[in-house]
Length: 234
Image (cartoon, rainbow, N blue to C red; front, side, top):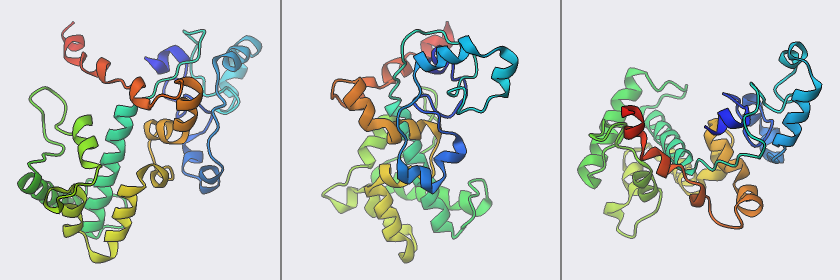
């Protein structure tokens, strides 16, 4: 909905003109990603440039516009739920690859899939935690509440998600995963999806400038997500 209203379609950035390639460029990551895409700027582009020239402009030059605007105000979607889910998914993919000894990114490889099944079995046995299983309510069992619960350290090591993950990892990978788990936001900015970029690269500005100092949970889309079953039925 936010993409449709703001005219960004499937463009990478709703808050900035950053491209997918720039999100993975170390120099851009180190310099940060200022919020520089506003409806007012986008409207000027649409008013001053004809359709033929518009299509020839780079994503940066047309403020990531892919179609006409349907809103006169800036859209500030937090997408905190999906950022949690994408972070957790990437963390587990890293764990699966490192444990399998597969250095090239290949989530569908037989070795990685076998390792994933083994790790999921350990988590189910020790924590009664089921990851990426079909849910009776639709979707998967990896929900926002599950992710929040297991990205926090527990005093009881036997109930601690990270502790159990470290028991299956090769010794030379334990510190890496510990650091990523601890500093998830900062580290994953170097290799993330557009949804994670939106939250992690722009969170401070969103909270201070657009949400009166309140946390991003105030902008969560979980209320809308809970209506998915009804929306599909309608």
